[in-house]
Amino acid sequence: MLRRAKVNPATSVSSAVPSHPIASLIRFRAFALPHRRRRSRWTSVLAVCLTLVLCGCGDLLAPEPVEVEAKESFPTLRYQADLPTLPRILRWSARGREFTRLIESWEASWALPREEGEPLRAEVRRAAAPLLAPRLHERDLAAAIRELDRTFRRIDELLEGDFPLHLAPTLEAARAHQREAEASLAMDDQEGAVLHLLGAADHLRATTPETLARELLVEAEETFRRVSGVHSYPGEEAARAERLLVGARSALRNGDAVLALQRAWYSIRLLDELGSP
Image (tube, rainbow, N blue to C red; front, side, top):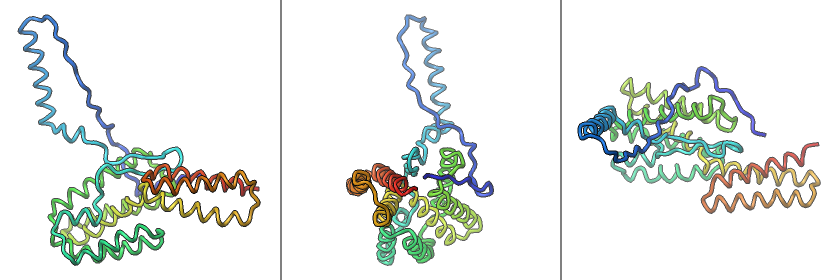
């Protein structure tokens, strides 16, 4: 059922990203060595440590910004740090009462189907950008844009440029927003940079397990209602599909979005197989 879409080379992100370094613990055993040799040994260790510090070992050992979850069934993306969405950007500046209604609308949009939620989020972004731009420092925007670029390069590496169809359009839209944010900031258009930074973050959030679990569960329930009235399923198979949907709803309520995704996905697969001639 899960089809894949090759990314357009013109919009594909570079996959030339070095593997994340793995820090190893070096244990030294106490050998009966001459004093000079012991001193030389520890001097060398100290020199290596100082070199790592001077070269920025904190960056080298930083966790990867994103990882894939449920890759074998219904791939989604889990982000290790907060995306620069509207609530996070408001933490960079003094929040005013004028943002209360925008935040409420943004949060409510995630409970809507995507075809309704995304237009509402776009409206919120257009209203928020001119209010936020004067309050933000250029360095904060530049750092967020760079982190998004790092995230996209990691996504391309993880998925090898071969995005599942349920992720490809959203990731391509997010990447386009990130590039527009970078271009806007280079032209000192801070409002445009904020607008597109928010757009990139919202589209990336739409690829997370929580968001996709809600969407897939709705699709699975609609599929069950639609096909159950057309096809005569064996009672056992129909009951199994329904149990999967009930389990998916329960997992989502309990905060296990990945399990909810898997159960909803298997339910849809089962219904497709039963409905096939």
